[in-house]
Amino acid sequence: MVEAIILGIVQGLTEFLPVSSTAHLILLPWFFGWKGDIDSLTFDVALHAGTLLALISCFWKDWVEIL
Image 1 (cartoon, rainbow, N blue to C red):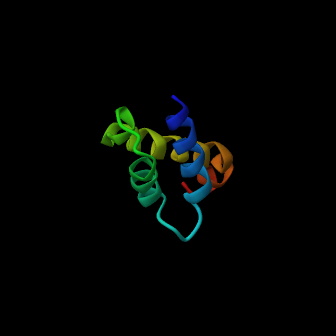
Image 2: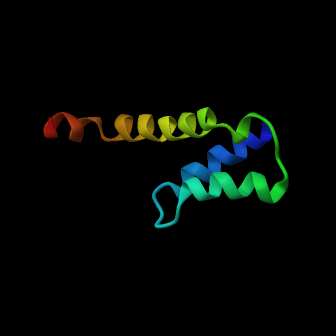
């Protein structure tokens, strides 16, 4: 659970920087030797879905104007 929280924070911090957030999601568990559900594609998709929901909720007025 702690690993998932840490990876969620890393995803949030690195998603909008000119570095690969996906690479961080791959390298961080490898570096610390974490195993389990955090290595799955489903976990990565869930983190990116959280980013998408955050963007939509923050910029929903802009999305309505564009559409």
